[in-house]
Amino acid sequence: MTGRVPFGRIVGVFDFRMRGRNPILVCDQLPRRPLSATLHRSMPSIHDDPAALKALQDAIYRDKVLRARRMTEQERFAEGVELSNSMILRLHDGAMWQLNLSDPEAGWREVRRRLQRLGQVHDQGRYSNQRPSKS
Image (cartoon, rainbow, N blue to C red; front, top):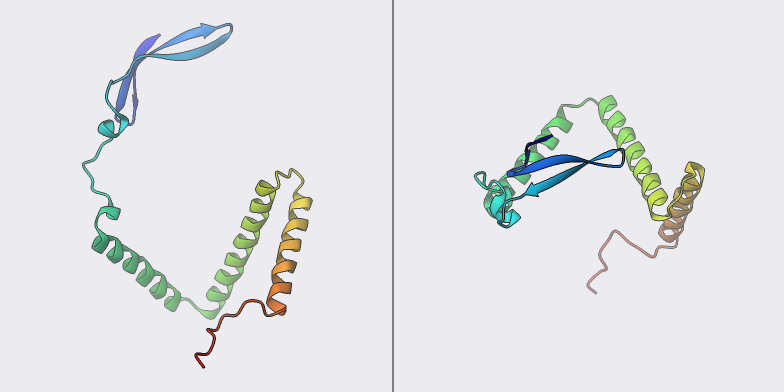
């Protein structure tokens, strides 16, 4: 079976061949130009214009502030709980990935260990959220 397959803006001729009982996709013709020349560039990137990027960031921030102002106290509390839960799950996923663990309980033990260590550092006063005085 032969045909044309689009891959983004790259189009090549492909052929299915059998390797034993497994079909493999073989691409016989690809464009002979760099990938960057192949990509579609009709839409400018927001990152190319610092003023436009700043305006987008301000609009996103303004939207978040206005949405928070419309919330009731119960909705704000629920959002805070949801944010805390999602961050704890991210900590767990990160510990599982960093230590290459497959046991979820071992991941939770590592999260507890890390949070206890952060608590100890905070209690010892090693870090401060205030600037030192200029005297």
